[in-house]
Length: 360
Image (cartoon, rainbow, N blue to C red; front, top):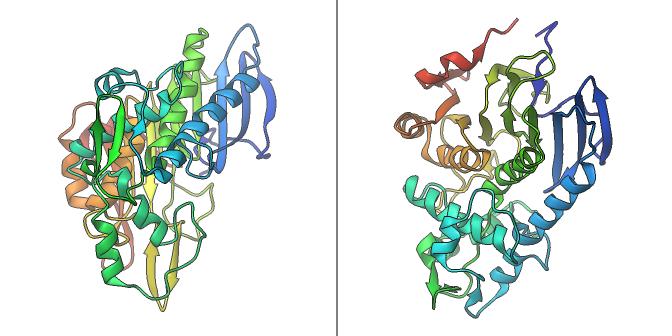
């Protein structure tokens, strides 16, 4: 694709992974840094030329202190280790009433908001999106424990861990407390956290009067307003193969006041004796999900919703995922799948036509 000025979701015109001071292009500034084991990038229009690097970093650090399983002192890590009822700080009704993203004014508020949102998407997706899958994610070597391939699969151990899975394994106790049905129940918000973080930064910018911006964390994107050319932001969907470069684009799309998240199994996987084990764990089987769906891109009003439901789609497989997204208001989906002859094909919901751009 030559002579194009698309902002790729994975490249974003940044060369450094470290926090970078804003670079001004006309009234647009760009900044970036590291968060959640990946990078973030922000482009925004501000005639006042205000620098938001430090406050954005602070926002994301505080958010990680609530939801990162890689931080031992985080709220979610303390919940996962806890054997006693865990004080959520607010009732489930209050948590469900929190805006997405929450303001984070109270301790554990982001954790509570992610829990409430996850519970909602769990029910909406029929259990395909399930943050309680953490014990299985660790077992298969994709969690916060030591990364290692499973050389020998013990089906009895998988079955035992499956008994810990299901959002009904976490109960509300005496109003403000989360109580585990069984010891060993754990939560993992990694399939929703990047999208939530994107929304968190986007709302922060809006609170400061910014109307034209693009926020990206690890490929998940929220766009509002217009880009430097005065047009809707343009994003590339990566080609879903392990050998594809981060700038190899399957499709380019317009993103007018929308969010986009893509989930796929084509990068985070390992092979043992010729069998592929990918990081998307099916909470209903306990095993890494393998189906013809290579990547699912969901377009939604918020990146939190897009992130969670893109993961759910990978668990569902092509047909169920397409029907599911197609049945939801304000959602569109772009699905890349493998065919029997080894080639790739695409399928997308009809409402996406207006967002697609010609590849040159």
